[in-house]
Length: 256
Ligand code: 13P
Image (cartoon, rainbow, N blue to C red; front, side, top):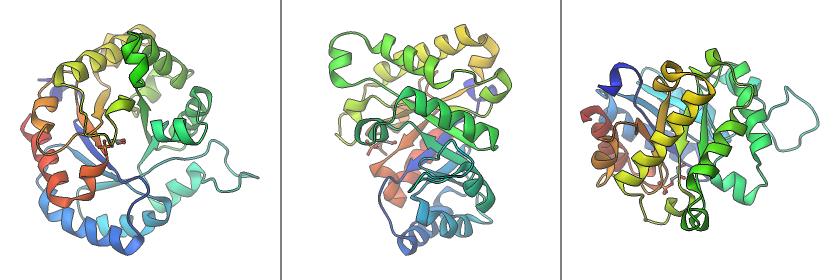
């Protein structure tokens, strides 16, 4: 039912894993396993892997994404990569505001917003990550935290631009910990995010946004999570590095 109005997207976030030759090999393994996918399949890979990944994905149904981008077109920003650079080599998606960037690299909602707007202006599709810390959940402020992130991260993003935005709900306590949110917890927050989007934009615009769950999603728990009405896909870390596991999650998204 929900697939009538929005696209299911399964995206791998490879994080700081795989050299270019390893990336080529992994994509060659994944491609035949996902060729009949009934959902969008994306691999977000380290910057140095992008060119090789784009070449390896040619003629397949796999889309390639980056793991970050800067907001300026060019300039004195040592170590950063612009949206124009990504666009020119054929990147389609870009992960923005991942909790690891917020935690370890000083990313704030303000910089997430700037990067999101720059990505959209360049014609890239941002996968904007939001989610609460464990102690924020324990303090019962998940709703406030996530609503605040959505408001700030999407500040000044137009309704037209929203059509190219993907939201990833990633509870920080579930990332790389093996602790998955229950399907009910994932559904509750994804529904809250959609309600927040409806308030900021309108019902129809909110209904059309793909909201992924991320955090220890794997081949065993994907079905249960993806069956939920407001969980439209997944942003997958560890399991995206193993072709069979990633393909099994894609198959689950195709079924549900
Ligand atoms: P894991 O799937 O390894 O928990 O990572 C989730 C994630 O951070 C995806 O962006």
